[in-house]
Image 1: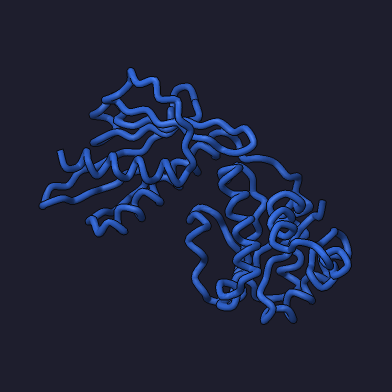
Image 2: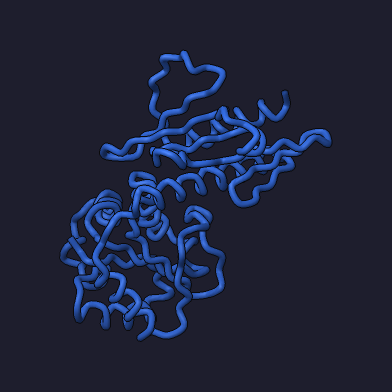
Amino acid sequence: MYDVAFSFAGEDREIIEKIKEIVSNEYSVFYDNDNHSELVGKDLYRYLRNLYANNARYVACFFSEHYYKKIWTNLEFTAVRERFMNTFFDSDFLIPIMLDNSPLTRDIPSFIGYYKHTDISKTAELIKEKIRIPYADNSIIQHRENILKYFLEKVCEAMQAHRLKVSSFQNKLYIENEGVKTVFTFSNDEFLNLPCVLIFQGELNTNLCAEIIITWERCSKMEFSIMHSFDYTSDDDRKYSAQDVVKVVTDDLIRLSEV
């Protein structure tokens, strides 16, 4: 397993090569030009996806205007995205580095911090320091907060795609329909610290019954369950992906806002 794998566009190789030379003095780095013998004859589609998903402690993605246009960087970032979803942001393996002023991909949630490259030595030292820090999962409380933020952000985006008048502030989602504004409050279980997201219609302090409860467990990947206040007796034991949860919750909240 590599300490860190670099993902970058070929147009940025001159910068990345210099950063790699500094980092590789102390740590093992997957850098394509140093691994030709390892890559020859391999099914690169499967090999690279497996490498970025499973065989590097950290992945340093060097984002630029060129990064989003390349076939191979898109393949590499697909593996990063799958790793995100399988752990559901429960670990901080990604080191996102911005080489220019291109917008950060929307596949990275807004709560993930990134570094703006200004100097080769400073960027290299940042990567080394990140590797040097003991790798640890987030606490369960931080993990729950990140999942809440993710679902609130993605449900809001999904509703905007439906051309609904919707906005979010802190942990609340506002939907305006024919001049009537409905508020939904996203909350964690503050009493038992259970792994769940509770969605209330209205302000939290005025409604003690959650309309939707999202729970999860992690086996080889994150799996979610959904329970509705209007269907507590259901024996539905289906497991959902994060994307499926966003779709179900979006449809449910649109329906509730129209009642």
